[in-house]
Image (cartoon, rainbow, N blue to C red):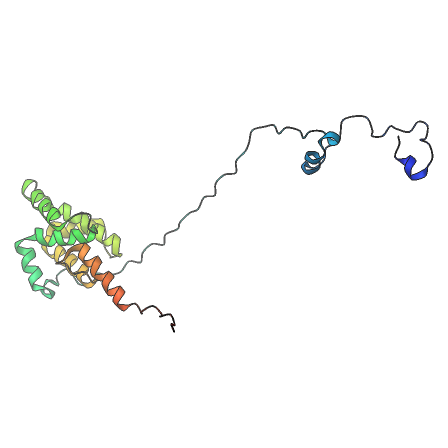
Length: 204
């Protein structure tokens, strides 16, 4: 029966389209189609290849470390006479101490010093090995120089260059006689000692 009969009380008009209209059921939002499937019909199945959104890409921009001068000169060996004497007699000792700090404890002073001696007696190119550490140290602390200058310094002034590296690490707060791990522990204790005490809760 035509619903218009309820509103007007008149019989259906001749030639009026049937109600509901013939043909495919109209599409409705998912909520209505899922709530009244007998009237609206079952929702159409989704077809096609699922597309996933690309993951966001984040870029970390590192600002270059400013280049600064060395704290002491190449020929300032008299600033630390004891280290100069040790380096002249046993350069492997100074090199081992420096290498342990630069490698941040991944290699020990004894291992680096022994390898330095082994290269020196087998090939005579120990200065190439120490030159690598000078370049690595410059990159870590933003010191002036370049690889070619490092090579020349260690070729002609090996002892002076080792002493300069030793003094530079000393000026930066490292105790060269205790190694990397002991320096880290000592610096951690200094930081804990300088921190203010935590606030105490009020108790009755």
